[in-house]
Structure formats: C-alpha cells, structure tokens
Image 1 (cartoon, rainbow, N blue to C red):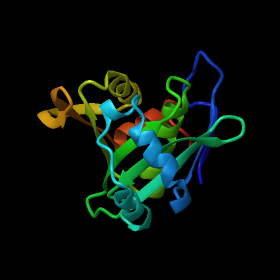
Image 2: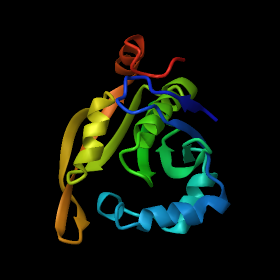
Image 3: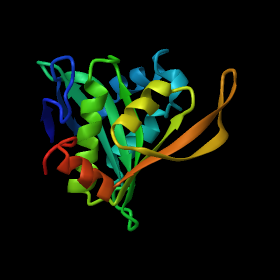
Image 4: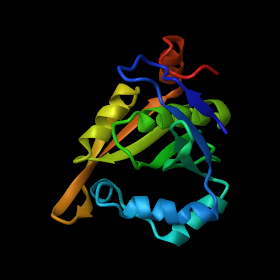
Length: 186
C-alpha cells in the first residue's frame, strides 16, 4: 500500500513516516477502541463491529489502518466510501488518529487523496465534519478542502445537537496543489 516519507509541504517538526494498509478482521478491536476513546467520541459517530466488518468486505469501501512512526505501528484508521461510484465522488467517511498533533493525520490525508484521485479515479473527494471539530476542519481547509455548506443541527450529541460542515476537494484543485508541490507526486 502507499507509504509517505516526508511531507508534501514544509513542516516545522521532522516529517512522519506513514503507510496505509487494508484493515483486517484482526484489526477491528483496535478500530473499535479508537472509536470509543473519550478523545474521539465527541467528533465521530461510532459504528458497530458489523458495520466495520461490512466495510472491510464491501467493494465500494476501502477501510485502512494508518501505520506510522519508525516502526510503522498502528496509529489510526480511515475509511473511503463510494470507490465504485459512477459519479466519481468518494467520501472520506472517517479518519481517526490515536496520537493527535504529531502529523499522522495530515500524512494519512495526503495518502487518502492520492488513492482517491490516482488509484480510484475520483473527480471529487468529500467529507463532513462536526462543527465542534475545529481542529479537523482547519486541517481539511489547509489541505485544499473547500466548505460547500452546513447541515444545521444534523447530529444529536450528548449536550444537544451539532452541525456538519460538508467539505470537498475536486480533481482540478488537487492537480493544482500537486503542481505546486503541495501533494504527493503521481
């Protein structure tokens, strides 16, 4: 699977080593533990094991373990949906990284974009992000995603409701970022 050494954009800290590999059944305890972690729960809607099992098997999904660091330990997971879409529109359904603010999320996002546009031929890669997840929204903006709209009070959370910002990056925008050396080479 794709591996990233170094970042496509300058970083203050040394670049991290990240690789994506297909999730296996034996990884699901790790995935479910990450989803149930108190640091992640406010920002995602967790799935049941059977949903992850289906995502591993169903050809329209790509379920990856994010491996990072010098020993390429499991540091998170991400899910792409719509991999067989006739509309060439893929969704980054979920990305959860265990250790925050170490560069793993940004590096994994670079690999996800490369897979979406280069390997799966996407025209559009989109996602939604909870309004309270300001850190993730800032990362997505910095990585070329444009906010398309807001689904107001779309999800119930423990203290009421939260909105979802819908964001996307289109193939021409990705290509322009690549030409500016902001994305991984083809």
